[in-house]
Length: 255
Length: 292
Ligand code: SF4
Ligand code: SF4
Ligand code: FES
Image (cartoon, rainbow over all chains, first blue to last red; front, side, top):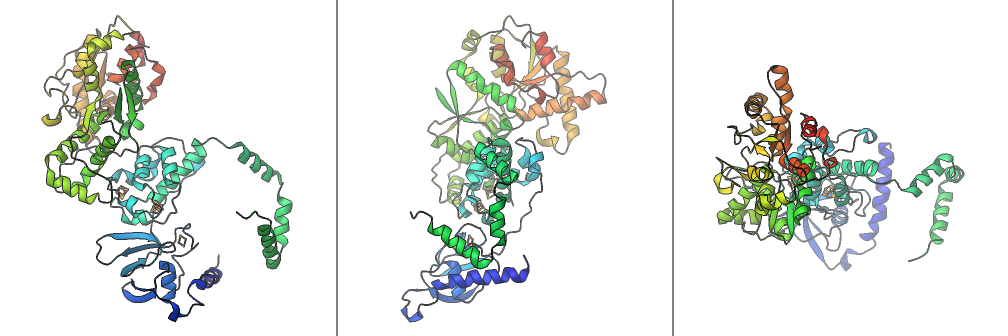
């Protein structure tokens, strides 16, 4: 995506999200907290998330922000609370500000990702050591587990990888959002989420039984069963697509 | 009877034959091993640094999980795991200050561990408790015309505080096999070190050791060698091919986990072994001796 186009989309998402902090008169906001963003003090409404609070304070996210819903893993935050020795980690879009919070967003966790052709690998336990030998450095300190905003048993899935237990790696890491917080805390410099992804890919390609209905659907797609419908959407303009979306939503059951 | 079981990483990867045959023995004696959930690698070597407690965490976590499993007897097959776990347990039991320090580091976790709640026991010890009499009653293959060399190495026998048997004249394997009529040959290197982790950067040490140990067993007419440590097994097997190339007089000797041999004698399906994992193929001698 071109940089400018990306920027426009990010601006749109940010302005859509503004409703939380605009339209309310500051006089009407009763509860305020003081937070420190990268060392500077800001007063912000107490019921905002870290992400909203930073926008309230005037920051504009060009990185460190994606889904705003706790799924994409882009908004990793590191913070400390007043009078607490612990370094906390969380997702900025999912965590409320607290008084005295010292925080910083990490735009990106640098990580070395191994390149492999998953279909050409054999289903052998040593594949983890082959691509990520550093997992053997794990000392079982459990720091990664404590850093995980998804409450995953991160150490346990690294240990499962060490012994080549694909199913357990896949099961324990299933909800990983690749935020990188485990990796920046690990004293053994392991990149957990890439290890986990290798495990899930191996398990799904070589370990799991193929689902019959998925296979059948793929065949249907290849035969062109849905080509007509796709073409219909591709020919629509923006207004028509929006209308089609609304119609489709209306026809949905309300739970 | 149920017993907690800690496999360790090697038994799940390169030493699969050991795990498969070792565990297959237990049901014969009404013992069910229950693998503890989400165990962590023991660290493979016991940390000797007294001020860096980080390296004690791995074995201690495993002890905690064994305790939580409600079955505080913890079975290990690997000699390295046995050594590391047992020494870590002893360390944390005897040093209250360090124990507190480790506990503080593991805050936010439900842990309360003193070091004496879990008893680490090696498969060889367990089988000796069952006794050679009882084991021999289950004998399927006999009479046995077989001469074996037992090899113990270090980890099961040293240091003294955790040894599973006498470091000078261990009898754990002798008791089992002699009781079944297998001849155990005498040779002087049963408790000699195989060279251990030196394999990583000083391969020549292992070559030297292997030559000495294997040649001595061969000279004393052993048909094969049995042992219980995956690292000893790797060292003593993997280097034999090089030794053959270096010296045409060197005579190779098949090396097996003691449990592989015992499983064959007790009539367990040989198919559970993956013979391709052996560098020196043991199947010809096993066939010759009527065990395959
Ligand atoms: S496992 Fe690591 S990358 Fe995945 S969600 Fe947890 S902290 Fe983030
Ligand atoms: S933080 Fe790193 S060393 Fe510590 S348990 Fe997790 S993976 Fe292992
Ligand atoms: S923005 Fe996607 S998880 Fe927070």
